[in-house]
Length: 270
Image 1: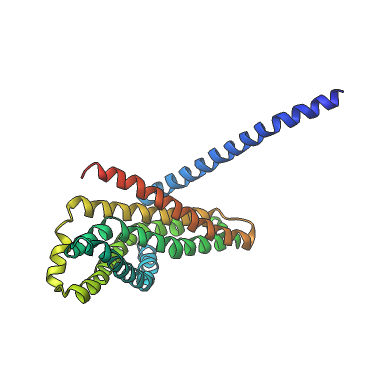
Image 2: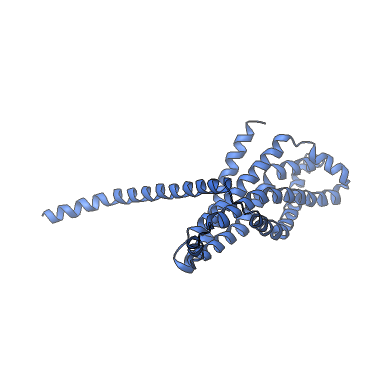
C-alpha cells in the first residue's frame, strides 16, 4: 500500500519536476549567452588587437558575399517594382513608384535581406568552422599553448560581421534601386537623374539612421550567434552540423525580432 502511494506521488510530481528542470536549463543557457557576450566586450576593449585577422574576416564576410548580394538585391528591386506597378496604375499614380521603392528598400528590405543572406551564408560558415575546431580540439590546443583563442577566433569574427553587414546593406540597397530603375525606365522612360531625385526626396535622416542601426545590430547578432554555437559545440561531427544549423535558425529568428523592435522605436521619431 505504501509503495502504491509513493508511485502515485511520483506520477503527480513528475510534470512539475520536468518543468523545473526545463526552466533551470533555460536560465543556465541565458547565463551562458550573456557571459559569452560580456566576455566579447571585455576582450574587444583591451589589447592585444588582432587587426590583420579582422581585415581577413571582413574580406571573407564582405567580398565573398558580393555576388549573391548583387544578384539578390537586383532581383528584389526589379520584382518589387514590377509587382507594385499594377496597384499604382489603377489610381494613375505610377509616378510615385520611385518614392515607393526607395522607402521600402531603404527602410526595410535592404538591411533585412542582407541580414537573411548573411545569416545563411556567413552564420553557418562561422558555426561550422569554429565547431570543427572545437571537436578536433584545436581550440583546446590554443588555450594550452598560452594564446587567446577567444580573442583571435570570436572577437575578430563578430567585429567583422558588425562592420561589414552595414556596408553590404548599403550596397544591396543601391543595387535594388538599380533593379527598380531598370523596370521604371523600361515602362515610363524615366531618366536616371529624375529617378534618383524622386528616390531621395521622401527619405529623411531618420530613415538612413534606422537602416544603419538595423544593419549594425543584425551584423553583431549574426556574428555572435555563429561564434557562440560553434565555440560551444560538442558531440563530434554531429555537433558541427548542429552548430551550423542552429547558427542560421537562431540568427534569423533574432533578426526578425530585432527588426520589429527597431522599427517600433524609430517609428516614435517619425
